[in-house]
Image (cartoon, rainbow, N blue to C red; front, side):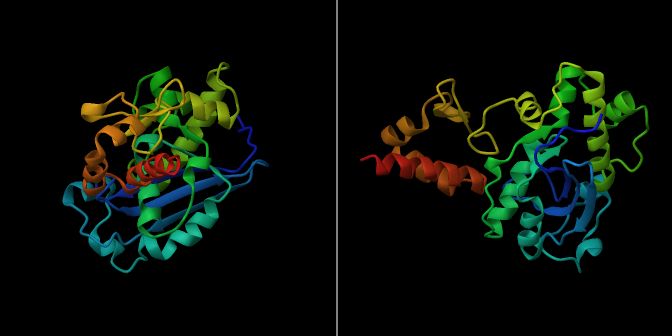
Length: 256
């Protein structure tokens, strides 16, 4: 089924040095940009992460230090990449939990101001798990009746994700061909930050989603435990989480 789009939708996949959003880096990004008129543009970029690629990561995606030693850093391509996805919604496979948080971190580290929170996110894995419970390769076989060749390469995984979403829309009439609906449907939590350390409660108030203050209002915790802010800012939390925490702290300060 052809996607019903109001804005361009960018399907993307990252290959990385690991799975730690705060510490790891992108070594490859591949995307397919689908326009409302059905036109498609695709691109794959190798990136020098500025750190060694662990052997266990190379074993998954096949990218070595030698493969990227002469490639640009993320900082070098950040502005052009931001321009490419400006005004676009984003889609991926497990993207809400990993790819989008890591991409946001890379933009922050590169000092590129891009407000990804204004975008709609469609996570094809979440749709799949809510409907069938499988892996991407199984999803591709199940929905598209094809075998996924070159799995764990960004280009193959990106295109497979795009095809799976189209097939999901064909298979499930209850899924609306609308990015806003798919974004809501493929979201598990209403996150404040991309890593989900803070979420919105039923009253649209920010609450912590981890640790000893889980479920408690962020504003109230920062009032009664001012040292908690410093602990988080000095801790191993994603930059985006620290950014959102600071926004809440400053908002509360300006109320005084």
